[in-house]
Length: 421
Image (tube, rainbow, N blue to C red; front, side, top):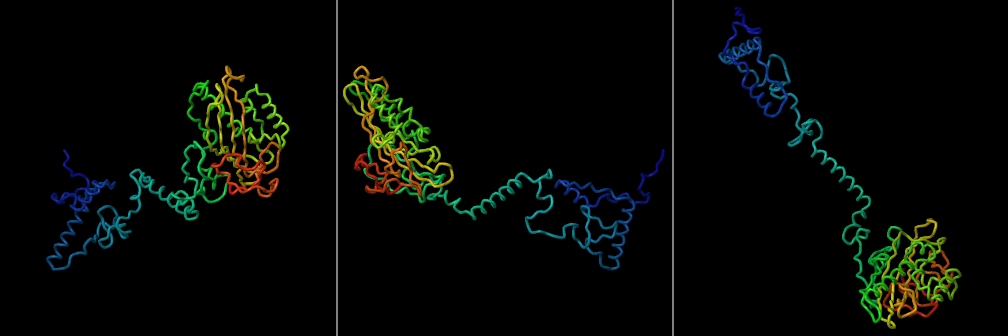
């Protein structure tokens, strides 16, 4: 049996020499604990152990002679290495010659274990960029922020809606609380109507109750038909664009032929005596068109018993229409305001010669503001800058938003000035 020593071993090498130094073993264990990927220290070869022993012997000889020891950290063999545990130069770890200050990291220290930016690092970087851009935008246009603060003038600071009207107010509304005039984006800016309800939702029905000869359901039908008539005559998009108010006419009783005949003639041949503007809001499509699809409305509806088997419904509403010139060639917005006072009747066909569910038209009146005077062609005509206002103003100045007075207080045919629109 062969007894040749393993390759790389010298037969005269001392067998009690440690294969790893304590420094190398400690360095290796630290790297393992820290997740380092450095390979385990290799066991020194026989030549390395011989060199190490010779160095120890030289060191012992220098001590015996009283000579100084070698500089700390200085190694003469087996050459300068930069692996873990080895030092180069004079006691400085390779690659550790510069520091960037406490807490700073370089290289892979910024990244996660998979080599990509950690999730926290990505989120922080994105938030930092967004914040920088937002600060830059606000610096250029501070109004983007201030308009959205309490008291700002932006659209975000919506005014508080008014409660529903149940009777005529005691005075005109105050200032709107917003500076500036109407725009396409904010057609009611600067107007008290900004706090009014929109369109048909603003026409709220009072609670119905029975009257002599009619049940509660009959009165509720009269109120509902009256609302339908107001919507068809003043809010229907086709009618506002100059169309015929056929839906409104269909709600009127055909057994009152004189009424329908007069209205149809007024639509066909408008005149000073028979002007459909008295009941219907219509604009010349070649002249003006509505901005958006919102009309502001405020008013109230009441009812009372008429003759037995008949109920009288009274409606008093103001409509605010924002308009621009037809053709879309301008951004200037004007508001035309129309206040209507209409009385309609609904009767029991067993008591009165009427068509079931149809309305009879009673008294009605109208006041228009920012509308050309002395023009009787069946249309409302908003007064834009540079357009003909019709006849010169002859009556007193009036506030179109003042609902404390009743329709008809002014003299018939008055054409006055408006204090605001």
